[in-house]
Image 1 (cartoon, rainbow, N blue to C red):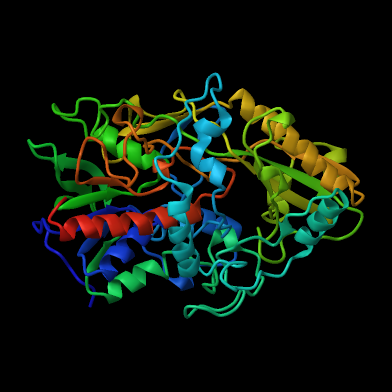
Image 2 (image 1 turned 90 degrees about the vertical axis):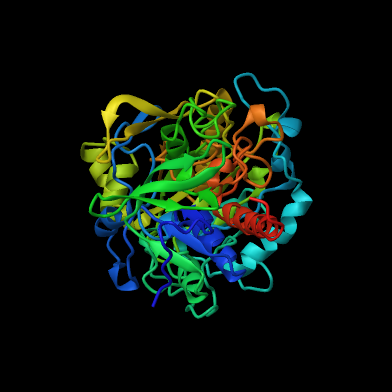
Length: 519
């Protein structure tokens, strides 16, 4: 029987969220004998609930509570994240890439860029080596530690051929947290091709069926699904004392805590801090800097579709096992700072291609292009966007959700550097497909955001961010930020591996502080 802790037990660590950050942190702490209560807003799915159907799984997994997008974001679905046990690790594609050394020092490397709110991370790249290695071993990342790469599907082979004809050299099937051989009690990938809708066989790493069950087996962990945290409480000394949450029936409870770690994603984490305002923290909990909710990043993205001379069947095989890394360097001669990756992207079925290849596309010519669905190839742009103070999460002045809390408003506008990078990437992607004889190429602007970062960022100085180099809030000594919102800058790489590595590092820090009697 799963462990249960009393609501008045103030010795537990409360972790809010069960995704890459919260799920990993929970297990790492539980493995060290630390009692953890994990509150997850979404339901707990079983493996049998995962089906190979895009539409059904989108509805099952997605966070569809009201959010308002502004600026360049979709007003109704500004970002695509999950509301379920396992969080967005159920949906993610599995790309597990390390930051490059220069990306930890974005301000130093890129210099003073007008309109950008750049900082260096308060972490050295060399310190992260060990934690990256631990994360890769935990997740079974291919191409690392002797683990073979995954095979390349047709979509990859088209990209690889074009890339090599253009002289690119860093081209392979990626560092993927998807088993290329049986490992950790999970099977090897069977190339089913529905990675982003949940892996029905468990070959892809997800906290849903790795970290969470392992934590439960320790006897030091309790998971409470369908528990939406509404507020974090604190005492007169400015330390958090517990959290208020609503259960699935709407009943309110307060779980006491020794430490609270927030891993609700880059919208819900700052939203919770802002909703936890008090007379002592009038601008929101842990927000004396005014930076909570600001500096939102989502990566510079876009997609390139190529209609090829022969069949590709882009939806067959591991969806994102394919990457060109040559453009991820920092080379200002290209006309922009930082760099980007090019990664294979599936079509999400004929309906997905029809919807996304040219949004609003219509007429005979577009219909003829859709008839070439089997010949379509696709790649995704993933580049480092620059933090801007005006991009971020605020509370809607009037609109409330089902719990009576202000709905989050997520605002994003491209920086000029983002636009220059995307245009360069469009040309690069087009050249790759034209090098292998593409009949037509489509360029697609960003989808709803999936890499959501930076709204409670790390900073060396308290006035520049929300948390320190360990994720501990500058203002509140027993409050931690444990997800992608702690990112100081975004890098060009998919963020999940770094979130997991930081969670492992944070768990070591918390355990050591608890052993010393600190908060």
